[in-house]
Length: 112
Image (cartoon, rainbow, N blue to C red; front, side, top):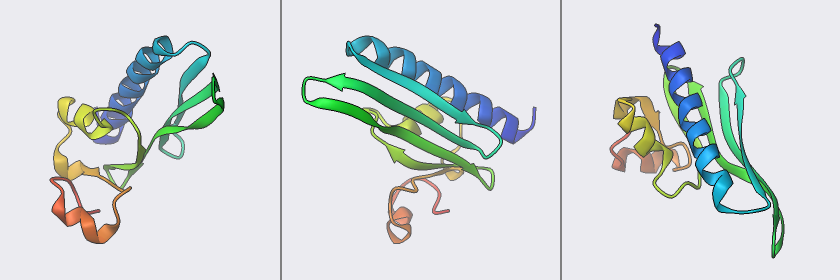
């Protein structure tokens, strides 16, 4: 299996696992993975109603770009990068894109 196919499979599994575990915890809320393999965008989307009103937003947004995971948004408790590392993705293939480029050098992950 080539690297891109492997990475697509890994992120699908991680998002599906997060969607299943998130959906049970809050009645009235749905957490859905949104997977676009044609453009290599992967999202975890949360929607529903809370006592404070409508919830409709992105929990996680990851792109596969130049053979790396670009984490654009991550509101998970442990961090999607932790899940990727646990799936044996090397840190140099993970970009914390939500950090400004000048700050990425201070993380254990790829700059770009």
